[in-house]
Every structure is written in C-alpha cells, then in structure tokens.
Image (cartoon, rainbow, N blue to C red; front, side, top):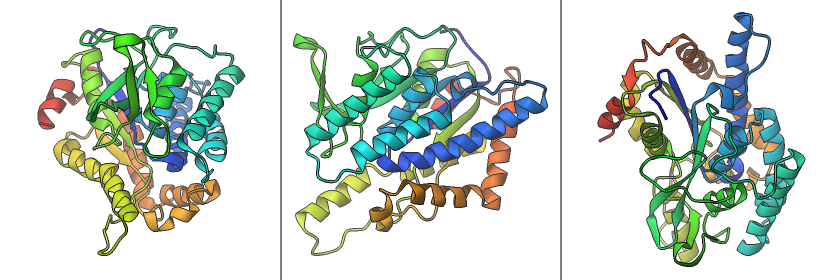
Length: 341
C-alpha cells in the first residue's frame, strides 16, 4: 500500500469478558469524534473502520478488531454481539475446551448470517480498497514464544493464508487452557494455533510493525490508540500455593498488558501520538467473581470515563486526531520503530 500521512492506528488488548470495557470506552471515543464531525456540518456518523486506518487485536481484542474493521459494525452493534458471546461462551464455567471453541464457532456463524455475510467469508480479500485494514495475533503451538499476524490485507514480506474470518477468531481467542487449539491449512502447510501470550496480549508493538509493513516507514502517524481491559492489580504468588495457583500466577504474568503499556509509554509517550485508555481501579483480579456480570464491568468503566482526568485525556486525544494533518504529522513509523528498540 502506498505511503500515507495522518495515520490513525488502534490496538485492542486481550482480556476475555473484560473486552466489554474496551467497547464502552471505544463507544465514548466514537461519540466524541462524531460530535466534532457534526460540528463541522457533516450529518453522517462515521464508523470506526472509516475513522481508523489499521486495527489490531489479541484474543477478544482480536475478535473486536474483526467485528469493527472487517465486518464494518458500529461499536453499539459489536457490544450487542459481544454480550451474546459472553453469555454463551465465556460465562459458562463447566465447559470442556472443545465445547467452548465449538460454541464460539457457532456464535461467529450466527453473526455472519445475521449480517448477511457468507459463513466461509475469507479474512483476506472481499474488502473494498481503502477500507480499514485489520489483523489478529495468535501463536503456533510448535513455536508458542512467537506470534503470527493473521491479516485482512497482503504485505510484501509474507505469503497470504486462505483462512476464514471464523478461523481467525478461533485462533486468536484460543487462550490456554480454556479453548482448544485450532488447526489451519492442509498437509505440510498445516499449523496448529493458540492464543498469543508472552507480551502479545497487548499487541501495540505488532500494530506499529504492521503499519510499517503496510504503509511504509516514512508514513506519518497522527495517533496510536491503545485499548486496555482494566488494570489487573498486583500479580502475586503466595508461598504454599498449589500447583494450580502457581500456573495461574504464571499465566497472569504472561498475559499482563499493563507492563507492556508502561514500557511503550516510556519509549514513545513523548512523541505525543500515543494514548492508552484502560480502567485503572475496580477491575483487579480480586474481583474476578464479578467478571461474569456485564453490568458490573460497564459500571466500573463508566466510573472511569466520568473522571475528570479521563475526560481531559479523551478530549486531548480527539483534538489531536482531528487537528493533525498529513503535512504536520509529528512522527513517522520509522521514527517510532527506532524509539522502540
């Protein structure tokens, strides 16, 4: 794809049920962006896929990225579909991994049917040129410490894979041990995928890398929006914990998104293009029993959005996005990549 300026990039963390918090925040952002558009005399509200150039996600963040970017849904529509998936897939505690994966597949089939898409819709292609690009991250079982990007667009460095939208969702959401791995491809090209971890649960680095591959290193960036699922609190291990408790602590460390967010803030925060939104209080792991209650998640997120400091940061983000032009974009993708090394 040719060089662009004024790029707007979005990264969605993985977080299971807590992805609903991301959608509440994203709904607030889209309301503010469209409010500014209407002040300029534009009567039609824009979709997220019309406002942003690239959306990437991991886990349920990848699911959200596909619904917003590939299927061109409104945030409200995605929230409705996500609540259905929470109820049928994530809130069921007595499911075997294969059963949970099968339920997620059936939910995605229903979503495609309701929105008049074919059930075997390909991830790559069938998207108008110029539309928002999106991708999800997953890991191969045989190389779990690395991540693969499953894309809606071609890039020079990788041959495209003919996977479907549903397969991409199953791959990025195949967090262990709750979901079954998914096999993609045939014969010697067959690969088994699981959900990404080891830092890729927050895929903002992958978003910057993918934008560099897609648009070119001299393309200017207006904003990088990082969407979190709430601060999990301090991750601790208590002496005498069972083996199950130790495994849970290790998974929490591998899936911790906030540490990556702090690193990114230190490395590129001074550029003025990076914004991170994630509920800071109320979503800690010691409230885990309440994560099945979507109303509780929404209440915590609304409290976060109503804080004065959050409102100021949201206003600054919207002002930055709307006032930055291709000619004045303050940083290029090459500069961002150098700052991250």
